[in-house]
Length: 274
Image (cartoon, rainbow, N blue to C red; front, side):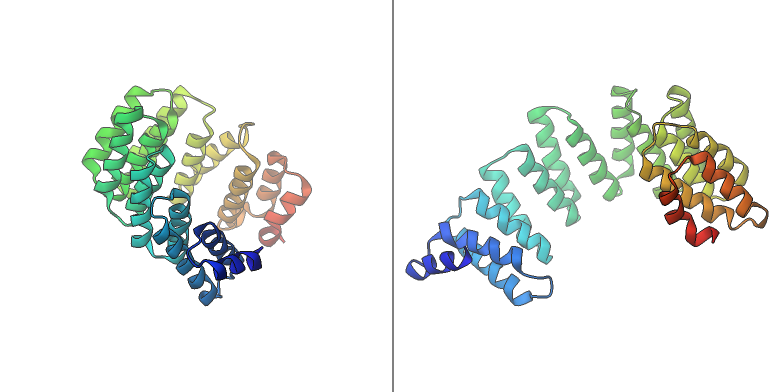
């Protein structure tokens, strides 16, 4: 296939219908160490974009290449052109994320505000604005907007838990975080995200009694996914091994309570319990 495309370009070096598929194929088959092949692919994609500046598909492929190569400013220019020529929701989100990656948080917020004016306060808009405000350390706007969202969506507990995580990890107010997690559990006792947030918090602050109480509650929650249960198990074992009196007997009892299949249990616990 690549040979045919190369032959087509020998006939007409500006034939973008051959140039950009060739560039994409060259890039796909280039290894991470094959810098020369990747750069050749980028060069050919840039040529295709030069001959067809309004072809959004070519611009998208070029932006992806630039992103992968760490050429973020050049990727941003492509995303700006794409959003201008074909302002779909996907194109706007790509543009906003590109601004956010370059720490241009005001620009990212501007894109999400435009999306909100066009399509309302969708889930993508809400989380995009929250992440941009968080990463930009704009705490006043962040908490004001977050409180608005929590009031608008009182049963969407993910926003309350996000607020708790902000208090716990970014603003170092663990008591406020715990109060939020417990508040969620009062409204939704089986909320696995709030339960797990408490487990991680008590483990981090080495609050042994509350750690055990919260992990037992989580173990009894039949709605948690297997990979989360495995992570809980691994954290529990690591914690127990710091307490001499809790070593093997407590761990084995916990393994039984978790009801893991034998293979999964062995893979996780072998390095700790052996």
